[in-house]
Length: 190
Image 1 (spheres, rainbow, N blue to C red):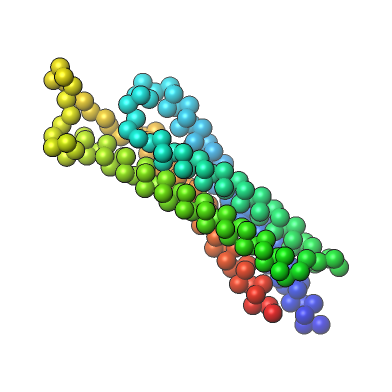
Image 2 (cartoon, helix red, strand yellow):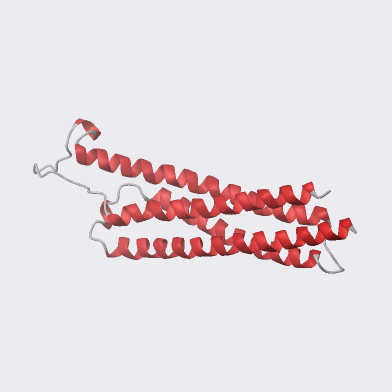
């Protein structure tokens, strides 16, 4: 009897935490998608599009982390279905449930890694751009051959790039925390 009660509690916890994970990641994915689209459209319309100082690698890694986030959201949907199946007569084994949760953890770890490296690339290029403004890079202020000072101010569009990266990083961290809790919960039950 206690075994059946524990299985019902695990089923409810799996469904509840998977729904929280799913919706938190969906909301953050919508924000990231909007920011990346705005950044792409705004970057093409900007007159400074050819003068952007190395944001490409950081944005590429952020986009890859976003695609991993979409896969992680799909894994959350599978966890919800698994939680429902645990309450039914035909239920998945503990090993199947554990493997499903571990796939979500792996996806979130890959996403966190991509987002962290992308953040480093974005922050590094923006630091270099800021140091050029202050005259720290190359030993002084950059000038053109005609003697005109070239200034590359950091724009709000570039800061939006960093924001999209931190949002995708946070979404993967939420997924990672909840998946680790779920994995601990199903192994504690035995």
